[in-house]
Image 1 (cartoon, rainbow, N blue to C red):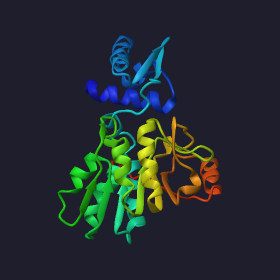
Image 2 (tube, rainbow, N blue to C red):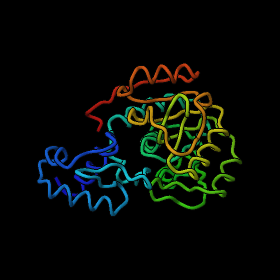
Image 3 (spheres, helix red, strand yellow):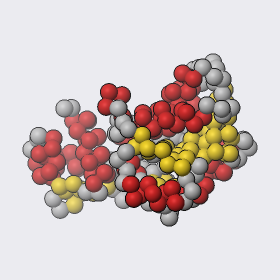
Length: 260
């Protein structure tokens, strides 16, 4: 395994479990404890983890991980979620999209529908990919672009999105909780996503199960404002029941390992 791959996977382990110790990581990746300590030092310099006595935890100042670290994490689950989401936009003429890796997987499927639709997004990576398809009309928001998500944020992005009527908004978030609702680590990005959700007739939230039960810093929308939430089977039945009690339709998909 190349070091870059190991660093990515170390971040995933630390984030998923809330912490990790040097010994456990060394055994997991079949390297020495000294190698893991050097890896953790590198990740701390990048503000991805904070080293603790004998291990590491997620960096408090940068919980919103860079897109490159998140792209390959839980990829099979994200692709299964994206396929399920495609069924929810069959009749939509205008689709709004935030950024995020799961939403990006959904966006890649749109050209395969053979329908001409209009896409409104603040995610530059999604806009660049979709504009290459002549059947799609793409409107992209401007503003400060966050490297962690490649989303344009700020007042200009909010104002831009507020001018459009959206049939279906497909939204990715950092946390979903029955009481706290949908939340993001970035308050500025959360406000942009909130504007998009309020402009839509139907709100569809896409999250892998690691985000169920997580509460991030800034609110995006309440669960009562979410029409459909699509996640994978890793989420607990108790958490999903609480979300359904808020009036949200919850769709659970099974990941296909061959799709990863």
